[in-house]
Length: 260
Image 1 (cartoon, one colour):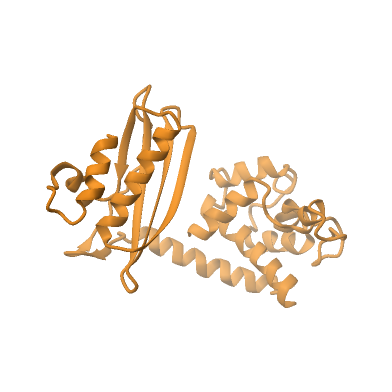
Image 2 (cartoon, rainbow, N blue to C red):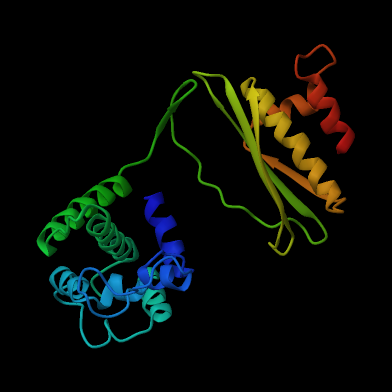
């Protein structure tokens, strides 16, 4: 689940707003764990070392927790289990449990409700079954023309000396509001610049084309002259190649051609 991926990114970058982190930012005076009332509430404490979290892990992973499970620092612990090195738990299930522990902590802090370890186990099992079911099923989506099987792609760095500009546009059909965004990276995968923009009203094609225009402009301003343009819209690319002055979006097309 994307929310869990985002959560683990926060964990790995020490960005969770635990009480210890909030105290460092001078938001509170007490960094103690609200659940156990003992040690400072660090990320590792709330996800593993709090007696409540420890009991939950022991119950969930009867064959796994041992001396080496509770010993590593947070870097080694996260790396070991998110790369699937655990004997009885894969990275998805490990992430799910961490997320449930954090969610339960928030429920206790903000709503005064603390679920039992058994309740977390039940939620963990249910999520596990849902994830397994989803991964076993061929994922298909409905779109123009009926049912489609998405093609998964991965970003690849451009040739040496080139930069890559990826743009994306979106439109809310009910309100016709449009937006666009993009990111530019060098051949060594280093970030160059990024943008997002609210375009107001428009069409499905205009948001893509407007985003491309803006992306080319800001990459030029960054001093980049060799750019590979990538967008998810085959329609936009087709218009750039073939649109005539009579087309309703030709002003965008002409601007893109000028930049290219």
